[in-house]
Amino acid sequence: MAMQVIKRDHPEVFTPGDKTYELEVITGARDGVAILAGDLPMNSDAEVVQAVSSELQLLHDVRRFGPTSYFAYRMGVLSALVANAAVPLGFAWSDEDVAIQQTINVRIDEKLDSFGYLSDGGQLTSIREIREYFKERRPFMQDDAVLIRDDFKRGSGFDGYINSSAQTYFDRSVAMVADVWHTVFEPNSAASGVPASKNMLTWYFVKEIAFLLEAKKNFHQAEKSYESFEQVNSDVSEAFDEIGDLFYEFGSSEAIERGVREWRIAYDMGGPARREVSEKLSAHYIKQGSAYLEKAAQPGSEETDLPNALTAFEQALDFNRGSDEAANLIQETHKAMAERKARFELAVNLIASAERVQKEGDNQVLAEDFGGAIVTYERAKGFYETVTEEFTELSNASKSGVSKVKKAVGEVILKVQNKANDAIAKGDQLQEENNYPAAVQEYSRVDAILGVIPPNYSQVVDADTKKIRDLALTDIDEARKNEERWKAAQEAAAKAAQGGGGGGAGGGGAGAGGGAAGAGGAAAGGAAAGAANKQ
Image (cartoon, rainbow, N blue to C red; front, side):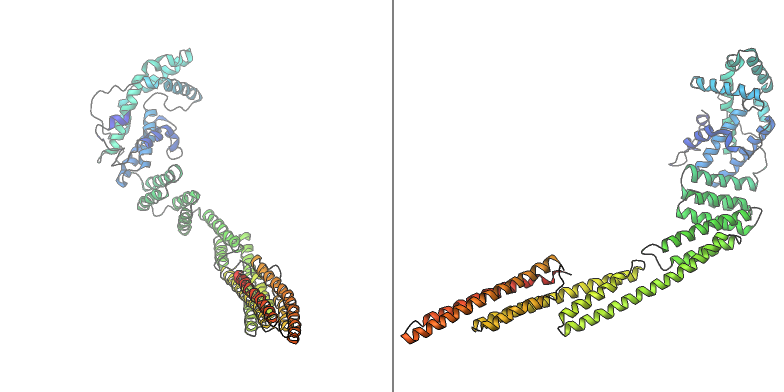
């Protein structure tokens, strides 16, 4: 209701530009005076009135930093403070009054919707002296409290004086809240006449940062609020410590880094909390170093992980010289660095050995020692595959080496298959020349030639090799049959010559043998094509 009243004179105070902070005002009012607990003493009516004055002055002075969601929230808290102070037993300090207050609050909540604000139509009041203002606006405050207590003692309770006066108290609360807010917004008004202290301004912005991080989850807006904090604080180390806690607990990497920065500022400033801050910093660097140490033990770790871990642990020890944990982790990290260096050197040596053996295989290929080359390449592959993934660059080099070796072996296998096909082609040619024993000898070499190819190398290679080997066996059989036919043709020709005819049969036999050999050569050429498919 007070928001509607204040809009007559200050229409945009809670809706600046395209923003709206009315929800924050309502939230602050609901959270109530508990938000101010510990900041302002409120153990008597006089202290409550002084708390209103202090909070009014504080909010008046922070307005120069611009409208914010937290300012609106605190205006809501101020409204709860004023509303409670405006009515009898709004604050209770005895067990009797607390019990009465609880009953009143329940009954007021039940009939709250029935209240309507009855404005007198007058202008809002700019408060100059807070005690005089409360005295004027709360006539018979103590007398009313006595009447209410008496009603509860006699049994009429809420249905007595408080019930008949509830609308009046509601109107008073709304009017007083509107006047206090109006005084906050008036540029030249100040209820106490004494500006808010530097300490009050400092802790106001600490609480604003807490509100933005915890309630709004808005890191970047909290950073903007920090700029206002810097304008009012330069020597309250506890404030920097508190802000460090707030940022650190927010949890993002950016916020954690910011929290550590604030702790370091507080640490450098000294003060009674310096030891506690040093322990926070030490714990942070132990946590940071442990993360690097754990990462260093994982595949794909970086060269900087262990040095970063060591630096973090050393910083932890700098901030807490008595930390056995930091000292032990420093020793553990030195040991890990030495072990990592040894593993790195071993990986380098394995790759160097693999490259040397691979070169030997290349030379064997040039010498056409294909069987030896395949065995040598497999040895090189074994060296490469021994390198782990711990060192990314070396792991990549070993994987590249394995790929090159597999490709080289595939090329050698293709050369072997081609050599076997060449033997088959030579056998075919010898059959064309009717030199069948020599042809069989060439076909018989194929099995030995293909024997250097590792068994079960790949489905494609195994299939092609079998096709060539089967072809050679078929050609051996055909050559022997062709030799018999050729010999028979020769004998027939000789007999025919003796008898004076039949020379055409021998030619036909030789031609048949040549035709068989030609077909075998064509099939052998097709079988060799798959040898290079295994990479």
